[in-house]
Length: 190
Image (tube, rainbow, N blue to C red; front, side, top):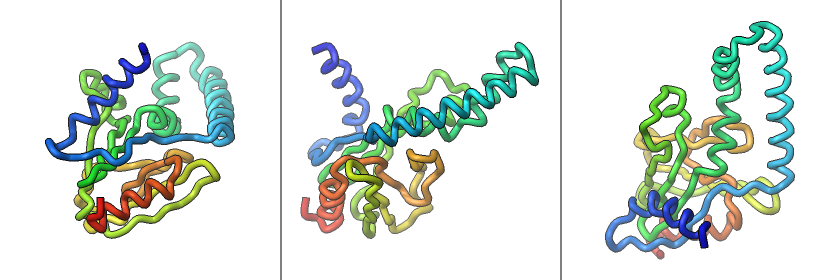
């Protein structure tokens, strides 16, 4: 019961983006298989340990510089891990809504902002989609938009933290089913 209340608060943030008669078709967020997540955590721990030991040896007890340097070095890893928990996607009968976490707010020390931002792409602005299955449990949906320069946000590869050149829905379970919803939206069949 307690978890349901917290989930409702989280959902309200993205659901506030809906128009009056807009209907939600699918609601989801990035999912990681245990093997992908385990390898990523091991890699992150090893990197932090090696860099941390080197910096501690070089700078001694200068904690602030150490932490700042770690944040800058591991920016891609931070994006990847926090986005896994914070990013969310809605497919409605009119568009795709992205709720994305933005590390730029943290790095600019903009502490008073809500770090989750809602963006959307109407189906009329999408030419096609490409589905890439990452493994048996999840995949990525690339959106081939008509005018990429009109997109005001960036998405990131949640496996390596690199910026995508087209908007994506990352690490989606049942990726073919979700892709079919988007195709139907493009064809105005939702």
